[in-house]
Amino acid sequence: MGEVSKKVKKRFKNYDDFFQQETYLYKEIVEIMGFNTLINIPKTKDILQEYTKSVHTPDMTLDDFLKTIGEVKEGNIDDAIQSIFEGKLIICSNKGQYVVVDPIPKELNRSIEPPSNENVLQGSQSSFIEDLETNIGLIRKEKTSEKLCVNSYSMGKRQNKKLALLYIEGNVNKDILSEMQNQIEKNIKKELQNQQDLSNILGFSPWLTMSKFHTSELPSEAVKMLLQGRVVLFIDRLPIAFILPSLIWDMFTIENEHNYPYPLMILIRVLRVLGLLTTLIVPGLYVALVAVNPGVLRIEMALSIAQSRQGVPYPALVEVLIMLLILELILEASVRLPKSIGPTITMVGGIILGQAIVDAKLVSNLLIIILAATTIANFTIVGVQNSLSIRLYKYLIVIFASIYGVFGLLAGMLLIIAYLSSLKTFGVSYLNVNLERDVIKR
Image (tube, rainbow, N blue to C red; front, side, top):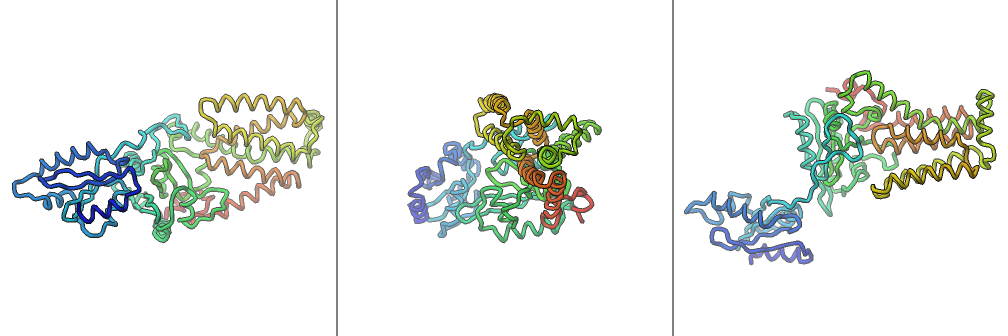
């Protein structure tokens, strides 16, 4: 056993999935090393023996053979250790020389499947998976262009996490791209596991209620964003694309809608805008008209609402907050429960709970209708993170409306608009809607 082999074995003495085997190459004993959880050892050895036969010449030595399969190294084992962690195979000779080889990997990735969080009615059913290289391949399959560029980074000190940055040369704003690349290179030693880590690396505040990333698991959606001059980021082992900069219009548009006739596409987007306004305004409007400005209503409507609230012991604000909290718990439970029983339990639980709470005179019938419509409208918005943010903002409007009535509702809307207009991603405003003119400055 060579010196390099001894050092590597000592380094991995606590790793039970590390293997170190002897085999013959050109009638000489060599050692192969790696993780048996990442490498298909029998297939790799077979391919190695077949390659040996294909390049064999009478005067070829083991040293010559090793040079045909990679760069021969010796002495420093840091590269060998790092390569083993990356799933590579190390071939080590008795002379202390070693070569890093790409082995036949074990199948650790799931196949490409339909998206689980973004339903597609008419369009490609492919979705991103956890393997970064596969995700890049899906993008190249959607956009076969020589201008599609990929920059790869290895992030972190304790474990190297792969990060890929994709853009189309000639479309992307060079200032945005340069600033993003500088941020990544400046923070390349920071750990990267999730979106919060990525936000930290790019210099975003961790307290933003509206994400600066537009996320998608659809290759067609990511390619559309690339063509608009945006940048797509992939983190290895995360099956989603992080798209920068994120804009408000991303809440209402999906690429596969272009497979519909133009009037239908416009109608669907108008419905999403109405869904957003319904989610934000209707709960606050109920509180404002019931608790502060009942005189705004027609007398028939005011009497109908008063009758529906007869016997309810709480003020309108408490009534709304109680029901909103119960709905949030039901929504969260529906996400966490097993898929086989989740929809049934939440539907039955919601119906029984809603009927019981009305019969107990804890809330009014009208509020149940309003909050059911609000919850449905909230999910017309594109993107899970966007719908979560809107769900948060409606509480602000409800509180303002309970204090100042209709004027408070308008003040809350203006406050939200002012906040969104203050958001900028590498100099691009969140409310920007004309990408070709304002974002892409060539």
